[in-house]
Each structure stands twice: as structure tokens, then as C-alpha cells.
Amino acid sequence: MSQIYHSRKREAGQHLNYSDRQLIEYVYHQNQKLPRYKQVSQKKLADQLTMSPSTLSRELKRGQVRQKRSDLSDYWAYSADVAQRDYDEKASHKGPNLKLGHDYALAEHIENRLLGIKAAGTRGRRYSPDAVIMELEEQGWPFATKISTRTLYSYIEKDVFATVTQKDLPRGGDTKRHKRLVARRAHTVPDGRQIEDRPREAEERLEAGHWEMDCIESVKRDKTCLLTLVDRCTRDAKILKLRAQTQKAVDRALNGLERKMGAKYFRETFKTITIDNGSEFWDWKTLETSVLTGKARTVLYYAHPYSSWERGSNENLNGFIRYWIPKGSELRAYTRKEIEELEHWINHYPRRILGGKSAAAFAQVS
Image (tube, rainbow, N blue to C red; front, side, top):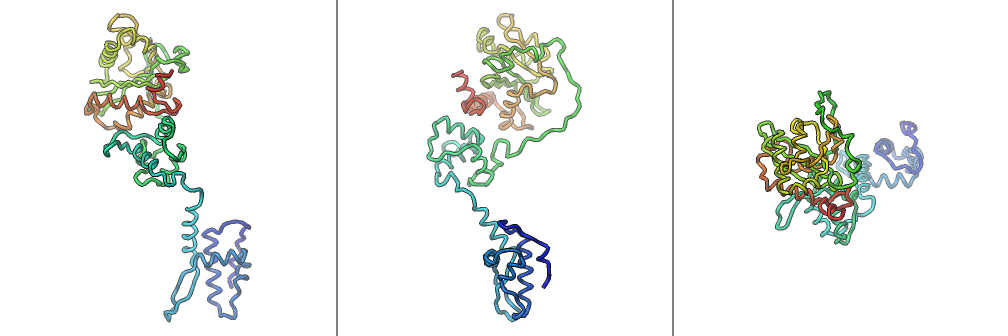
């Protein structure tokens, strides 16, 4: 008999792998081919394979298959492929039972929230898994079974839910990709206040009233853009639709907001605003001046060029908006009412950074 089995040594306690099973198949079949008086016992085969007789016996039963001889009589053989499939299938059932169990009400609620399904089967705005869990925690968890965000993500990855996959998540299950850095010319506003000069309250998010502002562009054939503002402390968001991404359009939008709020309330609400160096924000003196009183209504600070992390809350808000208005969409196709509904949804979306509360709820208690 071949000495191939002497080239492999198994450690006690280890599970058999596919290579081990292939070796068993070879040795077992070589033994079966010998005349009956030359065949060795199963115990000696186990010794040659450096495993216990009971292990070999169980393994032969696991991979047992019925074969036919040339005279059409049946005989039993061992298949490494059959044994490995059986092992993999049983291994997939290992581990604790699903915490969801038979809590179908919770499973249905989670699916509806992740898919944005409202009453009567209508579609609304989807929640992320973490937002679903935070909302349930805020409600005192009205279901019998309680699970964590990590567990919910695990269930989605394992396709536990009948109608939800990773593709249904806000980012489609994609992980963040690092972009290749490209050297670009930096444009700065020479006489504008820099981000280093921001007051401590704004830098450390100690109080409401310190905002970040940016513009979301449309496609090239559409001049429409969105002016987005977010409070660094409360994450309260405002989204304004502009006809064009110009200094005049931005100033007109802020003027309209000030007229609606009143000069005093606007000044108290927008103590500072941090912006990037986009051309639509270069005329900082005009943007800072009240259209009602002619006096200062806010103070603008410029972030460093190509340093989006300095306006992290604004970038996060823009990401929320891009869930529902993907890049490549024409912004002019969205009505002001639809933009207002999107703003309302974002301000009532549960945030982990706010302890599970929405920006609207957090602003009321802060």
C-alpha cells in the first residue's frame, strides 16, 4: 500500500479538513481494491491515518455513498466531497439561536423601517439599522425581543430577513473608499476670518448657534444648487434651494431667511458660520451684513482649502441629502416642498451622537 499517509500528521482535537478527507478517500479505496485476505482492518487504517478508530468510523459514515459495479451490483464507498458538504452544512447551523426567534412583529417593523414602508404599503424615507435601534430605544422598546445595532447588522449580512439585503441600506452596504489625493490649486479669501479664529464655543460645540454652510451642486446642465446649513452643536439642519451657485443667490437666500426670522432672532440663531473657500462665499462682508438693519447679522469663518473634515457636520448632512438626491440628479426637478420634507425628515432622524435623539428633540432639551 502507498505510504502517502505517512507524510501527514494530525494534532489531537483538530477537525478534519478537506485535505484530510481526500487522504481518507485515497487510503480507504486503495485498501478496498486489495484482495479480501490482504485488506487491513478499520482500526489499522485509523492508525495509519493518525486518528482514532471512532473518528474514522464517523467519517466513513458521513461520506458514505452508494456505487455500482460493472455487474450492476451495489457497494458502499467513501467520498471526500460528500463528507465535506455534510460537514459544511452542519457547521453553518452552529452558534446561538437567532434572538429574533418568533418575534415576527419586530422583524416586520425592522423590515418596514429599513425599506421605508409606511402604512398602506406606501414608500417613505428609509432608516439605517442604527437609526431603527435608536428609535426603538427612545420608544422604550415596545417589542418582546431586544437586539443591538451590531446584531441587526449581522442579521442583514446573513440574509435573515426575507425582504432586506445589504443593498437596501442607505449606502448600499458599501464601505467607505479612500480617494486618491490629487494636487490642486488652493483658492483662499485673503481678508476673510480663518477657522483658527473661531470662538471656543464654536470650536468645541459648547452651545447652539454656530453653523457650517456649504453648497450641493447639480449636474452641469442644471445651474440649480442647494444651500445647506447645520448647527455644530444640535445638528439642526436647514436646506435652501437656489437658482444658481453664485454669491448673489447665497446672499438672497440668507436675506430671505433673515426676513422670515427677524433680524434679532437671526442674529441670535446664527452667531457664527463656517464655510469653505468656494467662489459663492467670497463676498463675506455682504453675507455678514443684515438686509434689515445694515448692521452685522453673523460672523463668517473660512476653513482651510480641501479640508472637508473641518466641516464634518456639513459633510455628514450632505451625505444624508445624497441618500435621496443622488449625484447625477437634476436639482431643479425637486420642488421646494420636497426639499422642506427632506429637511424635516433629517431633523427628526435619530442620531447616535445625540444619544439616540433627533436634532429637533435634542434642540428642545439643550
